Length: 393
View 1 (cartoon, helix red, strand yellow):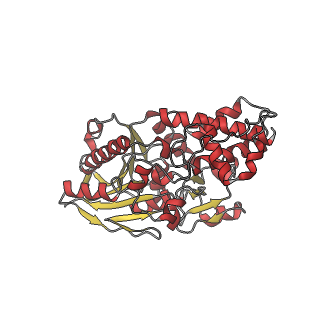
View 2 (tube, rainbow, N blue to C red; view 1 turned 30 degrees about the vertical axis):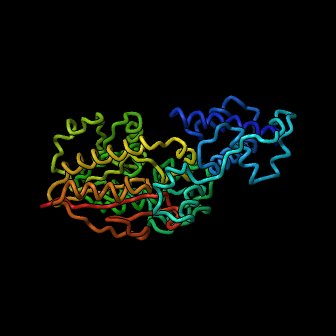
View 3 (tube, one colour; view 1 turned 90 degrees about the vertical axis):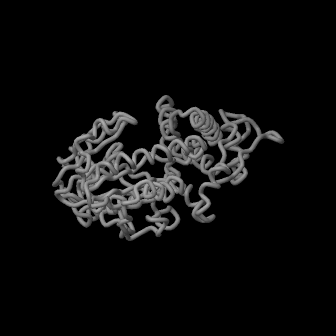
């Protein structure tokens, strides 16, 4: 592909991404993969160059642009060298006309920035940095020093004791350590969240929003594969991905449990007041994960955030019914909106006044409300709020 053709390909992909963001369609990385699957003529350098252009334009535009061309013209404003590639030759985009619409630079839509008012400019800007590639060493099968010796490009993560960091673009699936289940892909922030749970061998633990099970597997390792670990979710497809991962990791204590939305209590009746620990890594706006999914901020609406806050409250109340007297509930969201994080936890405590806040000892983050908050700028991790409460005895 010529340089101009790469720019036009990026414009086409930006257009698809903008439409998908408004209609709840596929994520940008999925769209990019589909695009190149039908264009075998594009080499690896072409794919990398186009992808970089797409994500640079996405990160730059806070509001959802009116078109892919407007998004790319926004990037041209920061990179004037790209303007010469708009000449209409060899599949290049048409020449830039005076007065064309140009996407404005910004962190996020104005209403959403207002909800992130506890973050300063540096914190806001870091939400759109490129994410690191982190692994968690599975202590059921290996020690970190052993894997470090095997992977010369890896370095220890700053905070998580089992974390490794690899260069961007490393093909994880080809590593023997990954194939053999000695490492899992997991952001350092998620690893720290699992540490905050303080799970121990022999416990009965419920991961109430397990998804594909990344934190479930981390909990199993902390439990030394001893005890009972129930992994719940309402998404059959995501939960179905857990057991193959558990087999690879050598985890045998996981029990998957599919729940019906808003009828979770029906399936969880046997676990009422039985759990030593319940983790609620709740569905949320994902504002702490924009480094990985920058177009996600174009998908959010005020109504969506309100709906998520209500869902978080519902899931927390379900979780509270499962914790035995004196047991622990850990609440986490990968969001930096206080309505979802510190505010949501404070509302839970107000609804359950006999519960008490339990302190969290982590090597990262800062105190925020009754919990701790991790951010890309301060900690180099995805953004999280995490807090812990103890059930009355």
